[in-house]
Length: 173
Image (cartoon, rainbow, N blue to C red; front, side, top):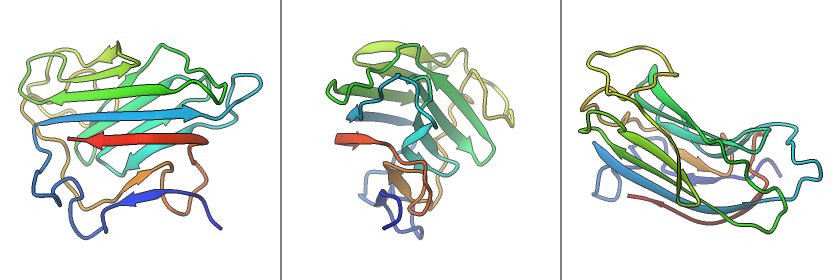
């Protein structure tokens, strides 16, 4: 019953700090998954691969490209998109990697698909800009810390934006 999701965290503590190794100004996300087959290659709706409110999310767009958003505070974020169209054949695995280093002066956040650099942030911002479509990361700002759970395979436990496919491995370090 309901929509599937794997939940990381409880909502009462930062799930990225609960292991004793807090994610602050550097992070890597590595995820292997295989989207389900889709006859015409155009999805009827976007699918959340993973999601955490006002922290980050990865979304499979209707055109089978990827969109990654990462926040440094509750209303300021960068958005990266891939140009590669993922195969929607139900058989071909995909690997995405996101790297983050707040201390770089440009290219602080990078999105890779199957080892190929797809998108990266531009020159770092020197002042906060309240937008979710910034092209540069706010220099030396950590990723947003909050108690929001991380949902793998959906936007929330009770929504219908689930990822349709197989998930093999998710590592955040």
